[in-house]
Length: 326
Image (cartoon, rainbow, N blue to C red; front, side, top):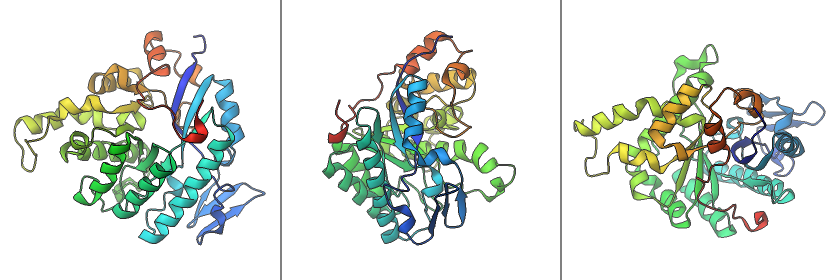
């Protein structure tokens, strides 16, 4: 296929090790020669994660006009206490914004929200909104955290009032059985995303905070396969399902998901659940589980589908941090 120009990639990652002065934090060490960041004993040895210019070159090579940039799971650090999480998020977000400021027409920073701590999460959102951003990213959850709990209402209200874009990416997998065979990623990532989306639907968050544009990674994870089951649970009044809320089926069209499903039939299922217009391009750059060679990896797909997801107008807001105006 001819290379399709891509209007926006909602799913790219960088770690602002220099710009956020991350190595000055306890538990974090940076090996500048090997380009390895050690975070709480975990080695992050993907050099491209620390090089914004590599991302921009990749965008040029693949005709990607703009990328939304978030930090990847190795730096979520959801074990930190509330004060430490707030400070760490501040470093990440200042660093991401400094990176975006270097490429204002190409990169948009998604401010990291420390979802484990509701008050800290709301504070980060409020600070970002006050500074002029409406683009955020958050883990889909953390061990022991239910994101539909009442404690998160200030976060959702702030994001909704501002008309924010929120990219949700899986973080820690709560199932210890998946520690083998790389299943924490292969199975845990889509599972955690499905749990998050189901929680937001059944917990009323999607219905009560329509100003938030939720975007979920990896085609919505397991949610497309679970959608009909959630609807059946609502229709048959299963225990603890709030029938005063809109039905799950009526809410799925209010979110967008990226196209990383690894097969066209899986993408078709996502389209059937969320709507064709709500599938957007995501690469997961620079990770091999993503779409690092769009023209080759999308070559077997229906050209109309490729054109639709690459040129999607589903994102409601302009890339509206003051430093990122066209």
